[in-house]
Image (cartoon, rainbow over all chains, first blue to last red; front, side, top):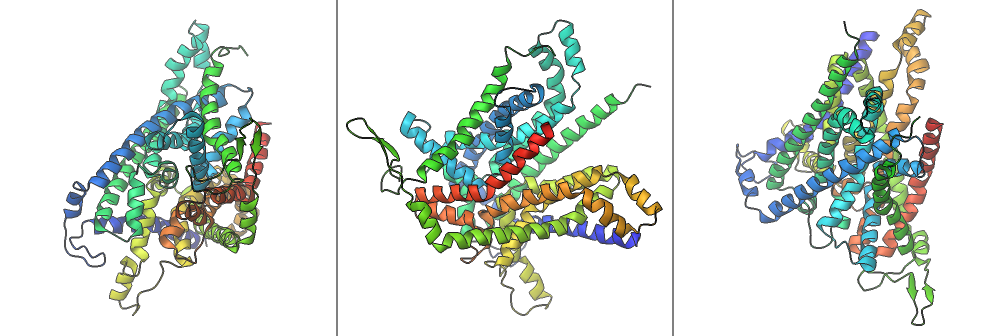
Amino acid sequence: MERRSSVVLLSVLFGGIALLYVPILVLIAYSFNASPLVNVWGGFSIAWYGRLLHNRQLLEAALLSLEVALAASTGAIVLGTLAAIALVRFARFPGRLLLTGMVNAPLVMPEIITGITQLLLFVSMVQLLGWPHRGFTTIVLSHVTFCTAYVTITVQSRLQAADRSLEEAAQDLGATPARAFAEITLPIIAPAIISSWLLCFTLSLDDLVISSFVAGPGASTLPMVIYSKVKLGVSPDINALASLIVCGVGVCIVTARLLMMRSERRRALEARPAG
Amino acid sequence: MRSTWAPGRWLIILPPLLFLLIFFLIPFAFAFKISFAEAAPRVPPFTDVFSFTPDHHLRIAISLGNYRYLLTDEVYGVAYLYSLRTAFFSTLICLVLGYPMAYAIARAPKSTQGLLLLIIMLPFWTSFLLRVYALEGIIRDTGFLNTVLLRLGLISHPLHIVRTSLAVYLGIIYSYLPFMVLPLFATLEKLDPTLLEAAADLGSTPWRAFLDITLPLSIPGVIAGSMLVFIPAVGEFVIPSLLGGPNQLMIGRVLWDEFFGNHDWPVASAVAIAFLLLLVGPIAIYQYYNVRQLEA
């Protein structure tokens, strides 16, 4: 009984993992297909990767997406870390429940609703204030919004686990609260901040729905260009591009995860009593 | 407790609070307002709800036409029910598939757990759009699956999967399975193994012990995972758009078409507000009481 159930469990586990990975692996394999026909293997080739370098539309969209991701993830770690400090360190303040709600809500809000409401905000703001015009600025602002939520959740749990007594000791020895925080607690939560920066970077790079609403007619991010091409059917250069993105993002995520795991292990070692 | 941070406190609280207030919460007020406007051929493409008459009187023009339209045009009701049904059954299948996966990871040796979790999480963070595209490459009529099955002689005609409900289900399960596994793992991992040993000592079969102990104690994980799959699945746009056909009308797609196809921003706003009230509202209230309970 015990053994048979283990076999069932493990086969579901590996079946599920196969379901998650087979499509991506097949896609990567086909990106090296010399034949432009998707269902015929025409030999190994890297021609599709070479063609990407000459596709101006894709290159421009990729550049815009990278700039947006850089700006949005950097903005999000600042706001998200501040929100995490506020929620963990200040037990009571007016607006605490509101902040908690606004930090958690973007995680469950269907993207399409966030996208349309933010567009309506931007359009109304332009009418009232003459700012911001749709394009880079509005995409960054909307990406910062959902990324902040992810940063806050990640940093919050790290901050909750951090030992406050060291910081209090530093203050007793005369350090200002800000200095005590910067020198003692900030290094402890740094891995969480770095890894959430990487996660935000990839989330921003990947966003299609919200960007489509707020980007306006002039700007196209990489997912928007990919989506419009994919709508027309499978194309081998998109296979090549997709493989590059999936591998690039994969490396980012594995790095982020390893950073977190290493710092957790170090913390576990430090927590162990000496001797 | 000493009031250590007192002067700088608001410097920390205000930036995220104001930012999220302006760019997350207030947009809903604008959507709410515009859902009472009417479409008009101008920039932006809707009439003013609030305006000033030449003699400086505030004029309020509220039109309930959009909401009436939602109730009378059956597309919206059909799309809403189809979205709910699709999301419900996809969530159920994710649960059936994800539970044993989470259970197997929770019982794996601690040293491999990290690796297994990373393997499950990795697709969750990699491009959603590209994964749906990759899946389409597998299941399309001339795709990998049909090519392999035809070669092996298992089928004589390609299977038509793309542009059916089956494709939408496959897409949602494929995309959201990690969302189910992670919270389930988190609760199953915390489970005290001595409870199961005690049950076994008292003569319970492993299956009985699972039903009596493990399953009831993992309910919070089941709820968390189901919500993480169900909510985004109901509002899903990319999957029905790339994998579904004209019959796989989900509310996210209707909203998109209303906006980008018909350029009817007020109706799109009304769809968004109605959707929010019908779906997200009840969940937000549930979460609110949950947070309150945790903080109390």
